[in-house]
Length: 223
Image 1 (cartoon, rainbow, N blue to C red):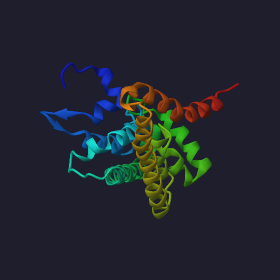
Image 2 (image 1 turned 30 degrees about the vertical axis):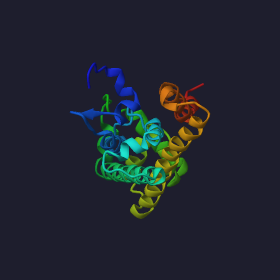
Image 3 (image 1 turned 90 degrees about the vertical axis):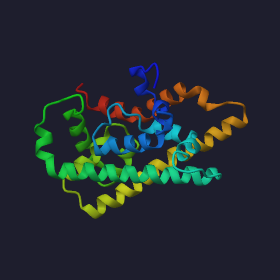
């Protein structure tokens, strides 16, 4: 924690390798961030997709926060399951909050943590895709934060919501974490250590994941 700079908060590797008093807490921080993206509505600046991809690269280090397992496959699978569960719980909190506070949210003024325009865009997104919006939104920043809230606001059937919630969380976690883990191994065979190119990976994932969001915003601009 020496020489801390605020810009580190934008770097997913900072959270993954974080330690306090020599104790590694990266796993717990990753799980909290995944939960917070929807459960605490802090999806505007927390690194979601890039965090999971890098977690796959550091899967052994993260799982060793709890116990030591020799099998890489077990490590990455266990990590993916824990992240998926954190995502499911976050969405459940978002749904509950939307169901209880829908009217309040639409009347609420903008703050650093809350932007009403994102809520309205997510509502349009939800109305267009229905239950599948929960799956699509998992892979899209901003929408990932507000889709479960909107599902609660429109009183989406709880069983239907939980089906898409669980499916989307496990798809998101397993796809990104496994991709990070095994692509790291493949590149390493060719002498390329992805850990030395974290900045480019983060920038690339951010561009890919936010491109659909920007396209949707551009389409809504008045001509």
